[in-house]
Image (cartoon, rainbow, N blue to C red; front, top):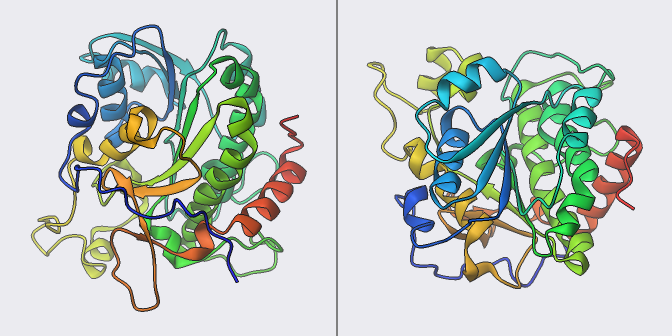
Length: 320
């Protein structure tokens, strides 16, 4: 029997699928606040940075390709800084964290890879699990003192509806014995992103740290770079002429739920929940709808604790 937070149910926030990031942050003043956005220089990450900076936050963009980030962020107004970070490289993560001084009020774990051929990081770990989950697990651990210092930090992990593909495999997380499947790997990694928020919130709330996971919606970005057009057509993401499924969002709309989780007073006193369309998602029932719901395996508190223990073992990181 899954153990699920009582808060995993919609708030009826007043926002929705077509809400844009600038809409949810309108009227909010983040002057004096520091935010970090991993991968914040393309797609929904770029629009997340744009929204946070527009409200006065100092935004640090953690970028695997700093030169490309400089070009993409050139038109973003506000206090935006770019710092190198490769989530597949433990040394890069440590170096990034050491360079961060002062409180970190918002951390958005946005960077990700999707459905790529089997590759492994420097530790030999499968790349989707390593980049999407373990890299962010290490990053948050290294930034833990900075988050505690904020006295009210929020950490947002970008998950996906892809969590429905499969839950985490605690026995073979790196496909060492299981035949590699690019979509199963992605589903496991996105379930891990959600479960990370569940246990991070449980451990962090005593220090004022609240955590959330987010399904941003379907958005056509650089995330799809490993997918041939024929595969995206077969999955119903676009038609033969390349026209996107009407359910897809713009990057501005895709960034909205991350920004809402990071800044909205509607979530004061609530954490450890999976969100979609600028609201807390409902818990999926058998035969339930695809959108607006989360499967129990991605928000199960017992599985989240077990994943945390495994993540500590694989990374050598303990939050203390």
